[in-house]
Length: 240
Image 1 (cartoon, rainbow, N blue to C red):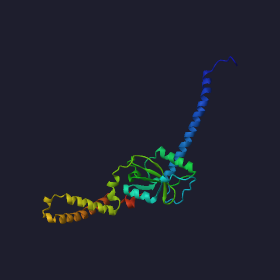
Image 2: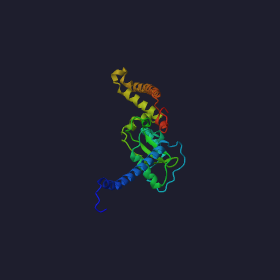
Image 3: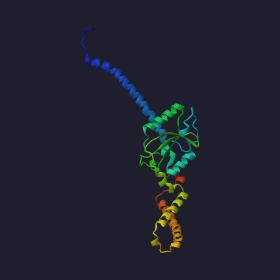
Image 4: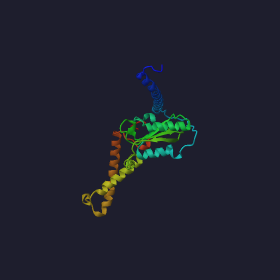
């Protein structure tokens, strides 16, 4: 009736219904988003090894984000990184990485099945996560598309410090350089030879120090399961 008493509680409930409906719609969208994220994380954590099927794309790619396997290999060897299937990656993925994957798939109308990651080997063993992972989608056998990069940049001196472990050849060359540096650093008074023969003696020291350093560090590396980057850049085993 026109002059009925006013039920404030009922009025409040009538005002609240539209808001609840909006909140419910938002919650539905959030739940759908969480479901998509969980399915995406499942794909990342179950990325199949030796995937051969090429990724058929609707549109052209940014050419500056497409990298060949050979280019990736060279970078991994130089900076002592690993290039492995995403299922071996043990750190958490940032939201931005998941967003980039979904955006890529929506743009090209595809579903990525095989993901690869470049990162220091310790990031595949749940240690330091403050490094520099790069997430790739495999396009074909030898080409990969950079989806997202996160974390901090690598230190500028990483390539220099890891130069000896790039291969057996760089290891041997580093042994020679270290031996020569030690031999040259000896003061002349310690050599107990004539000045005319000091260079021959320093060369003799360099040769013997090279042999000693080479086998000592080789033995030390075998005891600590260290391996050369040219054989370990795409290995999922820490001692290979």
